[in-house]
Length: 183
Image (cartoon, rainbow, N blue to C red):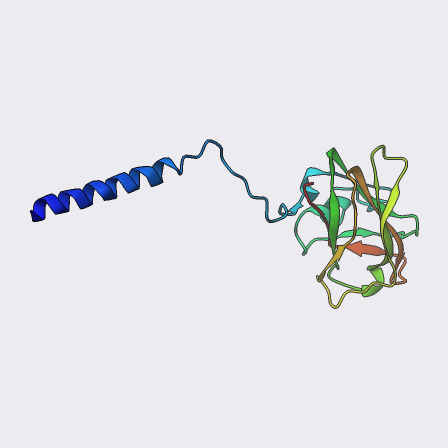
């Protein structure tokens, strides 16, 4: 009798399990986009250019390529700062940049960027100002400051116009990095 009762209980449990499992059939994969996409540093994918270069050229020890080399111990230095000075990144595909960092170089704060604009363009000629900063400072040498701004468009060119430095005839910057946020 006990065996018969036990067999009936097992059969009932199997029937319930079959019903439960058959009701859980998934015909499609569900995706949940609860978090925004992660921002990514795309600086290295851009082509760097500038309108004023180090006297030794872009590949010099303190040439322009040092400002995007990912090393805060190197720097880009120019000996004839002018308020029309800019550095620019050109990307193969348009990027949605909403933040960037600037890192002070190893010496003289008077050479640091103090005021600037960050602009975007898709033709390299007509630029839209995305961010403006004035009277910025760095807490110390080789210090990275992060700047965020609102931007709802993508651009292939991003230009950092340094409109003022700390008062020196020279200009220096260890790093400029830009961050893309996928749309």
